[in-house]
Image (cartoon, rainbow over all chains, first blue to last red; front, side):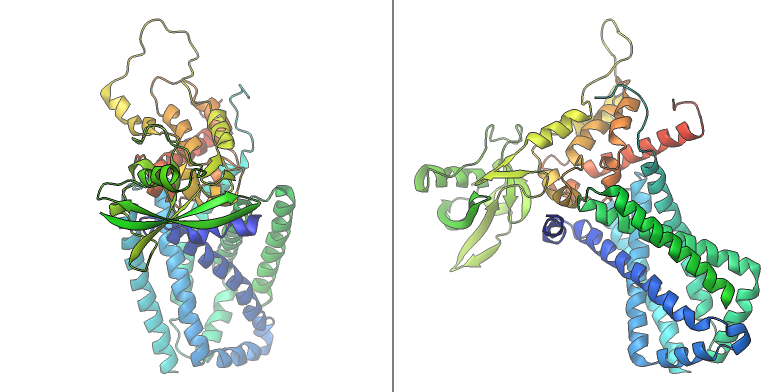
Length: 132
Length: 115
Length: 249
């Protein structure tokens, strides 16, 4: 049964965190981002016809979205995106056969870069929110 | 057992390469997008900036490229996850995902031109 | 000298349970030694495969605490117990998991599909000519693929691979590594033939580099790297064919 078998993806415990667990999170974050694409479409639909109406629909939407719970969700989304991107860059390089022997080190370096990027972006967003 | 030296199902290596290429493109696209979206301060300025940007054909091209990359990468990834579960009806899944892809791309481009 | 508990999955797919067996171990007792103790002294009906007892035949691979290991070379003192109950360490022993292995009974799984997949990638030297005398190879050429020749077909990599666990049609790390072992051999002339078999949606393209196979391999062969190199070979061959560059016919 495919769904029961795919639980093995979670049951696996390799010697290194950077292998099966990284793979599992890469897939989960990918699915979240794909879902977000369609949520983003829905949000952007508020902008239809904005050239003539002045975008009042979208401005109202932005006003509701500039609130603490949505900013918190945004920061979570950035974490998801930075994880997927950082691990993704490592995967692109590794899948060409480069640096596969040192994949653990490579993974943690990319994670560090990803976390730094996430903190910087979250800081900018929270700053903008607090000063608006 | 085949003795012929030709790869059957030649789409798979191209799909893999495109997955990696769109991944790299998107790191760049997303970087630019996140940067410009959070530079403006207030809601008024943001909406004004968006409306102005959308008029520029280069930005339109940028967003169309971004849309194509995201839809391809995301739905190909979803296809990988579904096939990894050992599903046998591959043509059906391919068909459904193609339909979703085309609808997403058409809607995205419609959004871009109707703002 | 201490007593530990082996929690072994007994039965068959229609009816199974986990049974506890308490056994004495020393510093250098292997998991396989423990299984022999159970069979010889406690429960004669325990079924498991073993042969060489020195990590060369590949018969004794099983899940030990949810991780595939060759039990003949796994010492109890070197691995973490699954839990501790009443002051005694508990180790959980199960048969190799996943859709690639059909469970027969107790700790025995069906290896037929595994060997069929291995055979399907033509794991032997292929020559287009009929050379006389020796096929010479330098140490440098040997080094490129030597580690891959050490595969004992134990199945640990295939049990560890997340894709092999859920997709019974995937060729699996063992077969793909065998294919790359021959592609990388300078004496071989059958690379394109093998690529035609391996470059399949259920072949190397099902691999997403979770690298659990390299984690599990008792010989530390690193199948994950071999498969990525196989992917690069296949993609290069396919592109050459499309653009009609020399090398792809």
